[in-house]
Structures are given as C-alpha cells and as structure tokens.
Length: 242
Image (cartoon, rainbow, N blue to C red; front, side, top):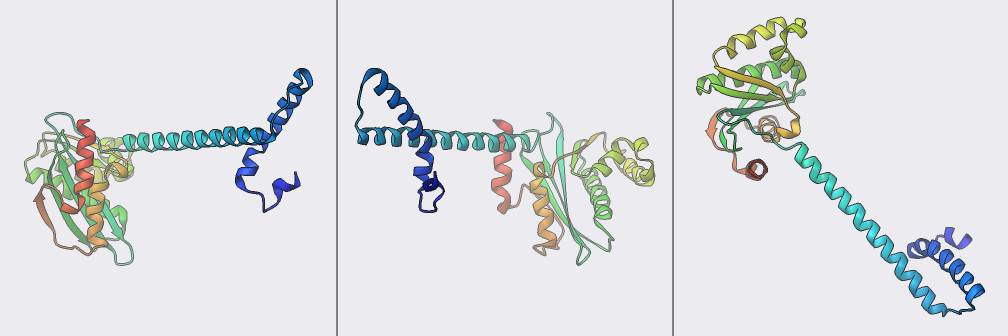
C-alpha cells in the first residue's frame, strides 16, 4: 500500500492495482481447487490489458456524455424562429458604465432564419443600463413601424421591460413606461414581446457591443448581416432548417 502512495508510483500502476488484487484472488482459488498454475508474465499482461481497456472505455464514455451535453445545450439555446408570415426582431444592448455610453442593435429575421435587416446605434446622456434598455426597445419599435412591419415578434432578455409591456397590471411601478410602449405598439397591427435568453440573441448583442467596445458610433440600417458575424447567423439559419 505504501508504494501506491509514493510519488514515484506511476498513474498506470495505481490504476491497475484493483485488477492485481482481483487476479491474485481469482488465481489463488483456481490453484487451490484445480491445481492450475499461471505464468507471472502472462498475468501481468492480462492485468495491463484489462485495466487499460477499461479506462480507455471509461474516458470515451465521459467524452461522449460531455459531447452530448454540449450538443443538447446548443440546441436548447439556439435562436428560435418566428412562425410563418411573421418576422422576429432581436434586440441587443451593451452599457459602458465608465463613460456612460450605450450601444444598441436590432436584427430582423424571417421565419426561415434569413437576416432581412439590422441596425446599430449609440446612446449617450443616459444614467444607467435600465434607462438604456427602455430607450433601445422604444427605438426598435419605432424602427419596425418605419419599415412597415405589421407582424413582429420582439425578443429581449430583460424580464422587467417584457413584463411591463405584456402584463402592465402586474408591474404598476412602471405604468408610465408601459404607456409609452403601448402608444408606439399600436402602430403595429400584430406584435408580441418575448423574454429571450441572451445566448439566443448573440448576434444583436455583439453588434451592440461593437459600439461601446469597438467604438463604432456611426448609426445605420442595412440589409443582411455584418460580414464578421456570418458564421453566427448562417449556423443559426442551418439549425432552423434542420
């Protein structure tokens, strides 16, 4: 037992120890009942093969389980499309507290995951992240109105804002804010506001972040997506169609 705890013991020797005990016990019984003798070298080779095979199989199983978990998580958090004839507007924000500067973006996609439009904008003169989120959502709604979108699903990762819009009676403290949203949303024939995990909204978030981190302050609206986000949007589109 001392040898197993010694720092000079190899990992393989420690791993094979249970098999040594098992084979010694098994061979002793066979010798006692059947009188059969065993070659020491063959026993060592058998032990090595069985122990190493077991650990290889175990490591393979662990890797397989981890891979399945990663795949499952990627499916769980993938971007979710809108139903047919609707478009989905993902809203992203990023706040730089040190300079009180906010980045904002929205990405508009159809039910097949194709990016129709995206927009980026910088916000200044705001006090905090919550104030930024309100202004960004109002801007996104106005943008959909100006582009004459009449069946829009807005997706955002803030529970407070989504709750104030969809269940204003449950958020009485935000009555004024709810009223502002309601007035603007009346200009869209059909709409829904959903709280969505940020990981399902990575494209819009990265565009918003490019304002504050990348200092890309120029506002614009453009068709399609930014070339440096091609992999994200194309992969999500493939997941939708698969």
